[in-house]
Image (cartoon, rainbow, N blue to C red; front, side):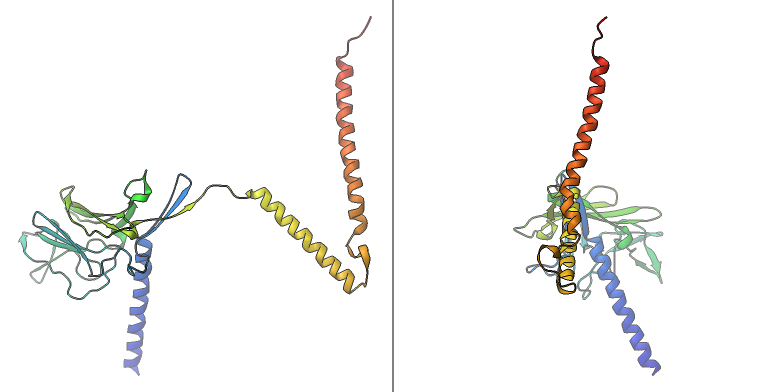
Length: 288
């Protein structure tokens, strides 16, 4: 019994952890912004018929290299497959530092730091985690042109050096182009880009061409008034057995309403004329 209970708890924890990861992935890969009366909604992991995992690489990771530096990475803090993960090879340890010529960014298992600080465990250099959920940011490639796509930045802030990788996901609805070049933009900062349909936003117009609040309120009042008349007429017809025009509730009030409106209007006109005549008599010349 204890063994079965332990297994059930273990499986439940795995399921909960998986759900949390899926939610965090979705949140990291979503981005919304309003620009010039247009709402742009991005979701890099939204499944489609051709791309069930969105922008995520179905091979498990993307690979790009430049000048001997090789980077394996996956976007949005989520590895699809974790079989045969890339390893950290050719690492030189200098005092407490290590220079990784071969680096990679994964999310669940081995994750990398290049040109950065390493932990030495039992005499072996272990790569420092980079690109986990708290260190991933998403922004527009071009704030003046949101249709270009998103840039996902993964970073690690170490005590001696900070490293980052910026991946621009360019909107291209016609093709997929994996990263081709790795650009070094700082001491330990790199940038690359890929083209993918998942980088395109779903747009919605936010122009205020609707009915407006006043018209909406007027429609609500008319609907309530119509419901009142129907309910009252139904009650008087079926329960009070009233026939003819008298089934309209409060018929006397509605019949006198035009006369009341006319009287109120004439009263306002009379007051306005009275004020006008008063001003006219005050300004008229006096003969001596």
